[in-house]
Picture 1: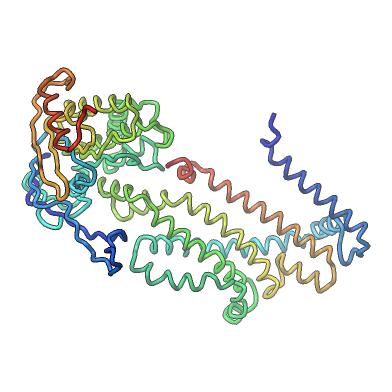
Picture 2: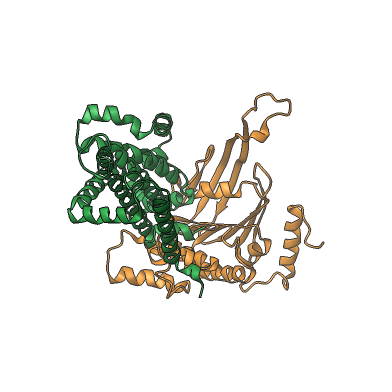
Length: 264
Length: 255
């Protein structure tokens, strides 16, 4: 199940960069940088939550802790009441790019999470089903470098969904895609979410993505990250902020919150 | 049609040109064939040594020593390099030692090698091992350290065991770099075997050269050099074929 509770989560790390050397030339104090401080958040089962925030506000750190790749300094993440401490195939992380293993074909990548499934027709059909779901039939035996950027992301989604996880964690999954591919991927992720009803937590820089896709949008403020806005989005799909005044209003509010304006 | 698509054409052209210059020097320089053998003398000697079987015997002896020493270097060097690449503490202990030993020419080990292993194949094999061991360790360690950390996260995400991490992440991720390292270090190994054979053994192409020098047969000396060059070319060609396997070549397309 994919209910996630984040309780009093703090994370700091030691900044060892040279640029922190004080101007008088004395030895640098290793400054502890607080990325997250006493963060409390809850993600409901089956929700697609979009997290927005300025660069470097700690969104990615938060995702990495939820995935179990990173340990918090204090506080904890609970999944359905049990503390989440290490990565597992229950919570699949989807990367910005290069998340596929480049020495494996699409088929072998999708098979990664199904290694312990009994060899046989059922397994072959299962893999084929997920590859077809993301429209990659015919590319089963291609290597990632032989695919376009959009196809690579779709293959990674197929790999993640094929293990039937509780939750997908998406870290700017559309970055680096061209405009049309971006729009297509966005539609595809929403379709998958409606079909599988998995909990999805997605970090994005794109406000429209958050407004169009999310069941809920969370805005994190600058370091240490604090929740500045937590808004449910109860609009039916297909959604278009251009014709939905409530969404437009929300968009302006978010722009203001992030310190920019849409109109120039 | 572009002539640059046929590299063999250029190679043959260069060798023919060198042969002509070589011939002209041997004819017009006034040096005797004992001092500077011309291409005809050398090819006659090559033919003669091929017919009596000694050339094959010496080549096989040298290749055997390279193969044995090089396999040992691969068997010990690559796993050690992987450990150094993954375990920071071990790397901090071992790296200074390797960097200290690495610049010592394998040839400097000849006296000790003869003392420890006596006369025969063993000291030569030991020197070959030394010559390729360090480059392989260093190249493997660097390759392992530069694996994209995302791949280890994927492994953790899909519950890989330690064994699976080695087999499905570390080995395939480093194969392209290791193939390049193997190609470079087999060239060094081939350089060293000839030098080693000039001292400790009674066979091999190095022995052929030093023995012919003692008999003042410069034509045989040059046959030895020519064959060393040809075998070196073939080794490099074979190693380059290794890099063409799909599993080894992903690294040249990705990124």
